[in-house]
Length: 617
Picture: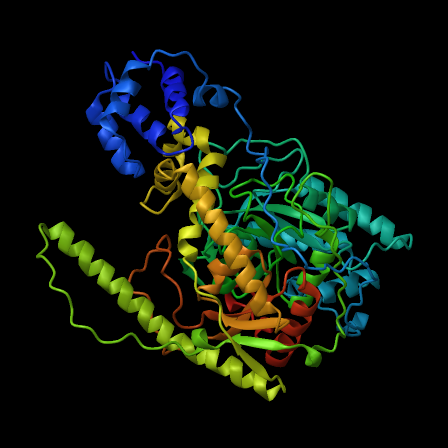
């Protein structure tokens, strides 16, 4: 039997160690008495590395050389918490970051008399963080009362929503009691003091399981508090629940079921920040922390009608959070209002001495910032897409089986449903531009540069497969609930075929894209865009921040998705569900971005609407 380490040594000696070729060839040789020239031909074809006959013979003749190889790295059993010795930085040469930290300036809270408080505290479930903060500060409502109210709602509605993995009741009650004592003694810590929140269950919390939403990890305990958890503890916030995420941060399917959209519980909540968006939208927490690698704050915030902030890459430390992609992962708040996002970001941003990607940049929130002085662009082509040109339909071979015909029919049905939803939703995007102009905003047309962005996503795929390499090699990937062609098990397996050279090439192309997008932002402070456009991929690759917020609700005439299956990702939209709008900001430009987004939100008021099924009677 050929020794893998010896084989890898030979390949490395020939200069092939950094390509796909050795791994593919070794995989082909498993269980075979020897490696043949035919195996080399097949592997070389997959790797796109031509091998001359004389080299093939040389490889076969030298396989007995002693060497170290991949197996020695595997033997280290590297935990998910260890990052690579390579650091992604979205900040380009010449960019200057604001370093001066100034006191936060929050909005004036509405005066609430004690006589105006509801007898049923449940009626405060949908109050904003800013509103709850004032009630707590003025001692009209206690942190303990709020904590018990949200814990009760989580228990009551989780049977429908499937939004929580673990309630942190003991911890929450202890925190709430401490907040009660501090506030009574005049030791008020700020607007998050005594306010209950939920954590996406990829954030480690000492003494509680951290499951990553994945089968096989149901009992995992990471004996530390993530940096974000520590910082919210310091701000006095009360953690009431570890909330669901799609397994290993994909979608809304986790080992306990499918997290639901409070506006239509026959739909999934989208993901992967499935529980944070669902619980926040349903008034089961005052705010939550989610994460995004490629849409995991944006998509569930859209589906559930929340206001989500994806901060600049490198603004919030990820220490203690599950790693999926070291060059793309970001943590951020999911809230009911833009200012709530600002209050949370103020508490969690900045270096922690562990996450090496984080810059010491200031976030100076000013609710009264004069947003009318900001330069506002909009992605004109995304708001006014050109209808596809009519082309003769290509002749298609008849389906070989009834099953193949059914698959084709289903795909056609899905395409038609997506087209109908896009056409219907265009009215919300058009109305947003009208509203912005009514507000006195001069919209500057801009366009994102053209690059093969989807090809750059190979970096995410390769990094995620590396983060969960042992899961694939051990075969434990079969424990994950979702096993479709686009789910992680299949993605991780196919990622083994991405050559190291192509990963580096994708990274170089990403640098070109970063430079080109930076030039777009030289002329604007904020960009308005439809949420469902290519900007989502672009700005996740470049590290730019975004705010996603509700932008109207579909009427009774809205097209319904033809497949009534909550696990079907495209099962979204339909009557009564929210649409969304996205605002993009410059790197570390969250203060301006949020100020402008708040102005639009206050002018429209869509964030004040809540799903009736979860409102107190």
